[in-house]
Length: 263
Image 1 (cartoon, helix red, strand yellow):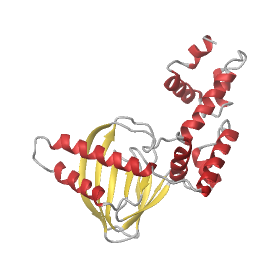
Image 2 (spheres, one colour; image 1 turned 180 degrees about the vertical axis):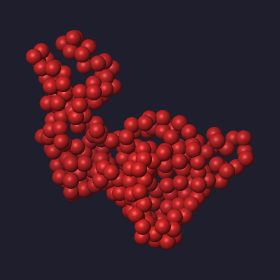
Image 3 (cartoon, one colour; image 1 turned 180 degrees about the horizontal axis):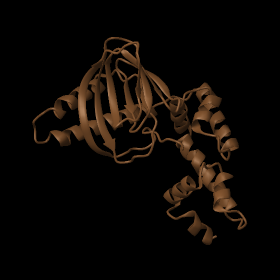
């Protein structure tokens, strides 16, 4: 099943679990996390660490960077330096679907660092308004990360990559094995990059465009009464009938069965 991206839509934060400044001295060791207990934003104070997720997403975070760790994500950490220090905020989004880990580079601006420090201090403050103020600060961090991630200049090379991505999606959307991960491999860039590039060019995420094409194709096939819903779903590229039905109802407001009766 495809994963969602916190860059592509604004999610709601349910609660903050903890805010901690820490240091990990297990450098030159590979550490494994089997299923992360919460969502998290992490600001790197010093040092560097490479994170590799089970979906093949990988990034190296260094001083000044901010990154997002998804709830229930599976990943490994390789800490390169003995001075790997960070501030992290564990929290929960209201939405619980699977999501990508994301690195937000070039976040060396003082406002990001100051926001994390302010969040850390406010979280441990005895003030009666501390929880409310922490939530406001965390939303501020999330907003800045989204805005910065979506600022991307499209030169000719990027235009060509975006156009190639669109062509690949429209030619291969109904292949069950086709995914955004495969798309990124074909273009020769990372998944995070192709998602940002595609949205900057076309105003929609590649995942949403892919699913839109699959749904439209399934609707066309549903006009033929001899085809079962499962056949319509499979021939449109969906991995399962259950996923197809869930997405169909989410996007149209009705089940595929009711939609078909109205044709």
